[in-house]
Every structure is written in C-alpha cells, then in structure tokens.
Length: 301
Image 1 (cartoon, rainbow, N blue to C red):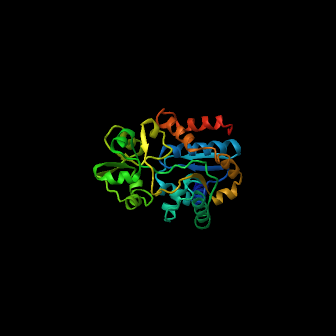
Image 2 (image 1 turned 180 degrees about the horizontal axis):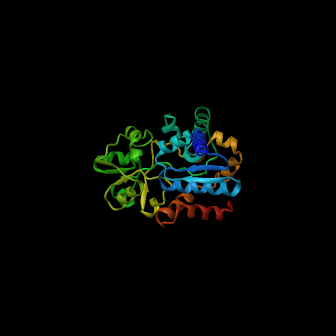
Image 3 (image 1 turned 90 degrees about the horizontal axis):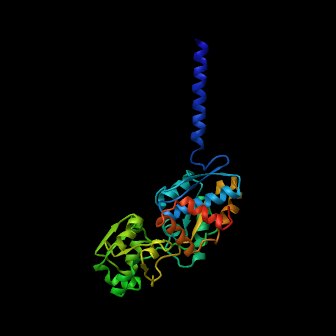
C-alpha cells in the first residue's frame, strides 16, 4: 500500500516537473528542429506563409509548423515578439508607420534600412531580403464610375468625396498610414465610410453598393473586377515591400534559415503576386497549392 502511494507521489512530481519545463519553454520561440511560421488574416499572407514553409522544408532539415490567419498586424507582431511564432512576412511601410510609429518615407531603400536597423536593436528581430513586390495601399473604384466622374487621382477623389461612399478594412480606417493620414493629406470627407472584410469590400464596389475601397496593389480582384487604381499624386502612401522577418534567437539556433528564405528574394514582382492572389481569391484554389505550384515552377522545391 505504501509502495503504491510512494509511486503515485513520484508520478505526480514527475508530471509537475514536465509541466513546469514545458511552461518555461513557452514564449521563447520553437524548440528542437521545428520552426513556426505565421501569417496575418488575408490571402496574400497565407500564400507567403506557405512559400516560406516550402523553401524551409525543401532546403533545410527543419520541420515547419504553420499558424495561418492569426489576425491583423498587431496580433501577428505580438505573436512574434512573444515567441509564439518564429517567422512571418511583414511590409516595410507597415513596420515603419504602425510598429515604429514613424512618419512615412517614400524611398524604399531608406524605409527598409530604417525598419531593419530598429527591429534588430529594439525587438531582436531580423529582416531578411524582400520578396520583390510592393503591396502598397491604393484608393480604387470602378473604371466606369471613375471615367464618368472624371476621377484620375486621389486629389480628384477628395473633391468629390462628400458625394461618395467608402468601404475599407477596419485596420485601414484606424491607421496613420491609412485613412486618418490620407484624410489630412488630401482633405477628404466621404458621405459614408464603413469597415468591411477585404473580400467583401471589393465585391461591394463591383456591385455598386459602395463607390471606393482601399485596394491592395497586388490584389487580383483589381483586374478581375475592372477597378481603377487612382494616382497617389501627393505621394502619401509609403512603400510596402514584403520580406520575411525572423526572431534573431531562432536565426542563431538555425542559421540555415537565412539562405533558405532568401532564395525567395526578388522572385515575386507586383504582377506575379497579383496573379497568385487571383488564383486563390477568384479561382478558389487552396493557398498551399498555389504556393507549392509556383515554387515547383521556379525550381525552388
């Protein structure tokens, strides 16, 4: 009876030790030979996540766990800061204006250098080489409506904004590099403005339920829905070049990640990214399949 109780107590102690060890490992990146790659809550991020996962698995001996659709920018960045994930793709302009709360800059190299240096020094996070495309914000509307109203630029749009309805992602409406800054720069004030999920806002403009949306430059629905991207004539929007960002402690443990992820550097221009997004959003192909088919076509896996 005493032996049974003794072994029972030992088992409980063992379980507690294992539990405490597991808890202490949380928040410090992945363990062993597994890395965790995450993504924000839209199609392009899902494709980028699988592109990064594909090259890491093909070019290293590491295993990859994916965490898609984490949420918006702040959710994804906090997950990286805490070590819940090791890698995700961020945009230079977003890092500059949202994460670092710095005023927008227009020179792509200057923006990249600034965010790369600051992330390294203050967050212990490393920026790797950009994929090649610039997914800047745009203000877009139906071509037929833009022609009818004589709207070519965002300044033209601002003049007619009191008669128009805007739909935009909720995050865009609150960001300094989004509607708040745009409103000040262009002195615009829409008749209506509503927050809406990206897929729905494009359809709302296409179907005439709204007049303007904050389209992403690399979104395939711009072409498919016959939308016109208005010229940012005051150059308000900063460059948003996407690149892998990695916890520096993860990179120290697995230096082979750098070469694997940098194999994607410069391979994706705006048109290519737009086509990949369209395959998922319009042709309804799985994002993982879209990513892997492209990687195979490029000889990367």
